[in-house]
Image 1: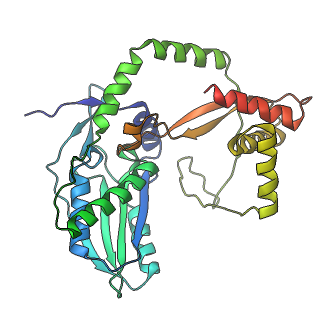
Image 2: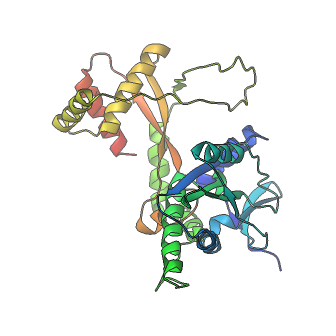
Image 3: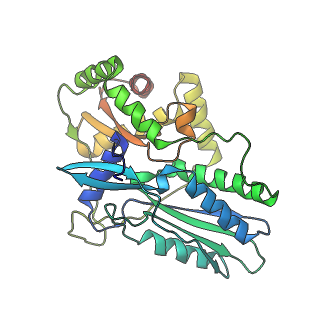
Length: 320
């Protein structure tokens, strides 16, 4: 019997474009570690993970292409095994993460596009490392995984095998919602709005970098830099935002856009802004990829004060 085909969502289309551009790389691996600070029954933890996989579509979705069109379908026939490994310390856990993060998945194969490994410390504490391809998951989903696995684990500890009146949320419902939205009046209004915002296309404001002297345009090697704001500066930022009725996000976007303008010489440009894209309770409980990127357009008037400019940024972000 042929599996039912579903279109990929807009969120998945964005990830698929990245997957095609960075072919043969692990750029779309979403990996996380869950650590328990208590003695564990590792067989029950493995069983809880199996229950989580069985009850969520993201772990059963596969892609296929027909007549040039990409679609997805559910297939629960591919076996999977969760290994329990003994580790000495967190450096061994880091090694598992690194191993997972380097794995390249073929999203058009029948193979699973996720990996899970349970780790066990000598004191019988431990946890698990999970990785799932970004086409079927986002970081929010990893938080849902941790919550649901803990819920199932406690259930099994109490010798129960199912939650009372557990409501299951399916990504297929979101697919149906998106199809309905594309045929709605709201979609037409949103289309008119974005057409007006981008009635002309501004230049790209990009911070160029060259890592390890790589000449490859598809090199996805990256590092992360981070710094901490001291308490006094953070309090000043919060006070400024409160007095001027803007969010910290809009304050930071204002600072960042001014910085981009100064280093590029541009005054009209857009910045891609990640959004959670989960608009209701059901979507916030659904495993899958929802995250998207909204383009925020910035028009910098050099005669504006920073306060006036940041308020314009806040007003602009409210209309998105």
